[in-house]
Image (cartoon, rainbow, N blue to C red; front, side, top):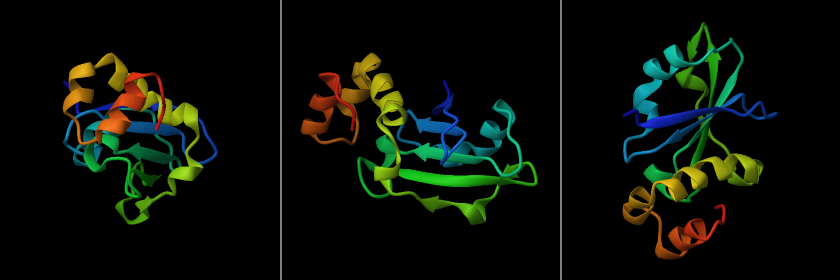
Length: 121
């Protein structure tokens, strides 16, 4: 099983979303991710690290593509208010379908309950 899921989102702030689905950050899988999606120089990828950091200021990170690879120097946190609900919903939908992961993840009880009840955080 991979430690992440990939969704093409084609938003102004990113072409793809990478959502980490284990306690391991998808940042440890950059080479594998590069091979699994069609990346173009200049593309921006957003990483949702909800299960690694919780719903904190460090949850969302962007990185651009340069020389056909992730440009580590471009990595930066992005203000969560810039991420729209349909992108946030991707991770929450995954957690609703994987109740065991939701039950034992880093999130506080109120956040888990909100997701279980159909909410998006």
